[in-house]
Length: 348
Image (cartoon, rainbow, N blue to C red; front, side, top):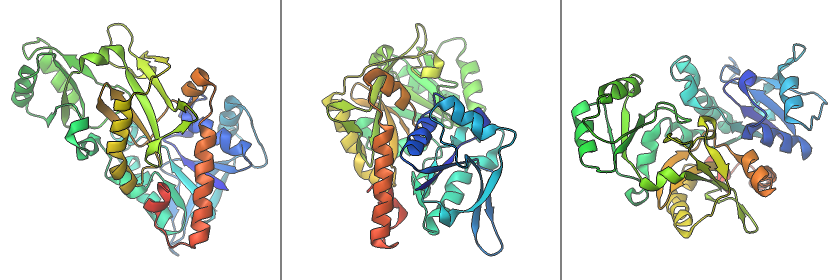
């Protein structure tokens, strides 16, 4: 099997990233891996879709650092590959990282991924589904019962009124963004720096004001879903708690959040089951849910991360399960000889 991973930039990939773990797991199972970025697609005059990919040749590195060094080595030669010769295109780029400085790159994965799927490559997550999820408005497509009360606006008076309606305060964050950037807790509409917060967050677009959940002070739980269901091996779920640093409302690991073992509750599983029909319909193969109590805070459909953290906490490598699922999709595609569309294959 040949798997191409789409990332924002190969130079910024890290040993701790889930993409790196997936690539190593693929190599260990005897597969070939390629790395591409948003600028590496070529649609030729003959309608052939090509990718200019970083590859390893015959090398089979077993360590993250060795893999990433090999991909950016000066002698690294890019290979021009017809996408029809790629079995799986794994879209692992974060559009929000490119939205400001390279807006053309933000949609490249979904746009060219759709063309790749039309040519027989299995593309996960499904590019048409990802096109619906380019910002956090996608979150509002899910049942209100699983979501905190939310306002989306650029009107400061509307935001002030929303804050006044919630005695525990609200979280303000950008509609387009990830990784805990520009996330603030506001306790009162009379806070002296509210205007500055709204100006800073609203500079890049619409704002989300979301009622604050007191349980969030204890952290949230990242729960992985695969093919629409919780990723699980035996009694162990692919999940971990993210405890925020003292004085910080963000649980994100790169925002100094601390990973802990998670207790996956029946409420969390109920949220996952509520989301399952739409995630399956949208072809969302691998998804990360961020949950507090019985409410969903975020759905990460582009670059859900944390599998290495889970391996360290539980000594279980869920990358193996993900690669096995991709192998099964290839076998299913072959059996059905192209009769199944990409959305069905993505979550089969």
